[in-house]
Image (cartoon, rainbow, N blue to C red; front, top):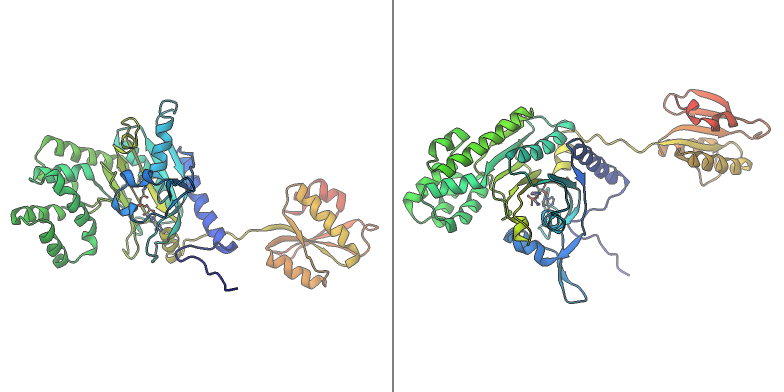
Length: 431
Ligand code: HAM
């Protein structure tokens, strides 16, 4: 039989990696809860159509899809937002608003595996559905930054780069671009940070044949602040969308995370359903892909057969995040501890070892023992390997002598207790 290798772009979580994953997901969950979000989940696969309908070409070309036995087209979820929209649509009249939900799904995308991109990853999703105010966008951004700040990332490590698709569309329309010219321009802007000036000009020439329009586009991509946009915007709608973006920045300032946020016209996002503010969180060294991305979607729920209800939110992947935190020395994963490791000084006492182990476990303490009847030294070694905090030695003359010896393995101090006294309250030995 030949050995079956793991699938490219997937990960095996041995205990050491599992501890990191749990640490990341616990942090996400804690930030969600302190910011008032409720947890939800959905199925790992859905009808294919749910993902092809509104997410756009990018995601559709990266789907793991299959046909089930009833000949129905299915896909493993590449993202959570369509599932969220479907679930909310199903119960829209029964759900109290605003809907503030979070989830930490495992997602799959048939991407070419590379640094920060795998075929299977965990993605923290935080969304608010209902409110039209950019306060909801600000609250989602705050939740992401709140987490990243809590693990030690500073404004010079990461920045949330923000723009608005609505504002960009209105600005471009103000400048004479038609609606069907917008999509290719978004793609171009999205690529802008990775292109040299010359490469950008070359692509622009291909996308926009008209020289006068090209000049306008050059001016737009060079805009560096909301004030500069305000100067260029002429129509009322465009002015209004600039005011909305300004309001969003004001909320972020009031929330105390202004230093983490910057305006960036190149942020347009790859997913087709975004309609309003859009944002991505990037590491400032710029060597990694986005840690997080999100924005407002006005038409997604209606587009999936629901009412016209707006939503906003983001997804943060564990892969880029783990690389970033490792690079900055900020992974702070505690090893799993064992409370008690019970040792027999004589193999005749093994039954007593087992009895005490299971008595302690029944009382809610973690406890273990050696499977091999070995010398005390070897059993101590196992206690250390299993990160036990205390060892308990059952002496050869037990139970005539009903004392047990408890050793604190961190500082080496030892104390004797009557077994009954210890079992009545094991914490007496743990301080
Ligand atoms: P997205 O930009 O496609 O947005 O993904 C968000 C984040 O998920 C990325 O910034 C990245 O950290 C992570 N991610 C995506 N693809 C991969 C991959 N192949 N390997 C590792 N990590 C990956 C969305 O998915 C939107 N549905 C987010 C959203 C929620 N918008 C509103 N609500």
